[in-house]
Image: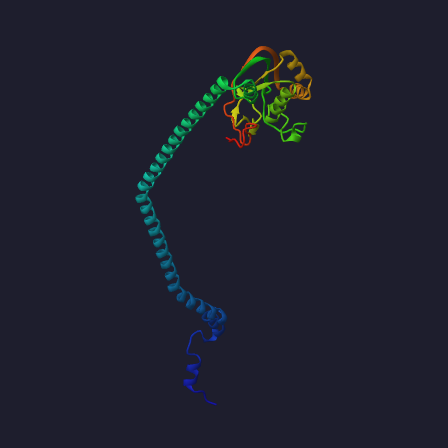
Length: 297
């Protein structure tokens, strides 16, 4: 069988035709699955590029708007600052003027009240009988003088606020060396029970309407703050009054405060002590006996 020249030349048209396996590997280095995946990734990346640009553009616009809002707000605040400062100054001036007027009115009230009480006491001394004068003395309406005792109570040295578990804690007071309102109440009541006819604390005359209270660490007598040391003056039968008080339950209570908590106390008999009249007398329900309806004040 004769061979055709054309068929032989077509079979061996490539010089490397005998290396077809190597040629196939070189021409198709990637698997078809990898090629398809790479093609899809490239297509999707090109599709997302415009979307990313739009997001960045939107973010830039948002930042620009935020900066504009902040700038406008700062400008408005700067423009409003002078007017607000002026209103604040006017308000402060009004408050100061009102406070000054209130102080002046209070001063006038105090002066008029003192003048009225002075006139009442003078009229009572001129026209009142012995029973009226005795009532005025006992009620604190008139100043008094006579023999008595002087009792000084002071906080312990290096007093510090703190809590304890002793007898004063059960009444709401910590066991420290600080003199409390409850302590002064007991001492004053003890003086009355021991025979005192008139009592004052730091120059503040006590009456049947007086109150000793606490406001924080301060002690108030008739709403007037007092500071230690507390000086109590009591008019009564000097030595007998001193002895009766120290032997009483309240006197022993004061002794416990001195021995256990370091409260400093001293008591001495005085030939004469002077007590001022009570600053304010307020009678709400009492009226003179045998005078009909009468009036209250």
